[in-house]
Image (cartoon, rainbow, N blue to C red; front, side, top):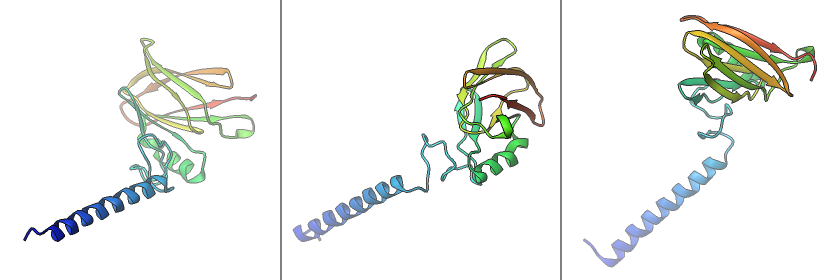
Length: 162
């Protein structure tokens, strides 16, 4: 039966549900748990196990980080699943972040241009020969790497002076 009091009750119930949903959404957004598409940390992402968010640039996927011990361990465990695994260190083997990484293919075409969020960067590249340019504090290094169809290639970058 459609009486004015039933309509008011239904409207009040819908309004309450919407208010709870909005409050719940606001709580979830402010919580430390969870991640967003712009959140590149390991908090609540779909990768699990402390892995940072996988990012995409063109047809190249990459992930970087390793500042915390959980994230660092997760990236080291995952290295064998990625065609290219890089590590960035400085004097006394301290880990470095904010290394600018630019990868070009054999035809000098840029395939990745990104900033590392920590000492580890894992990159999914097609098989082939690439040159990795890594820059930290204005100091450039480059290494040529060959990606095969299986396994992982490692490239360690070391800066003696910071």
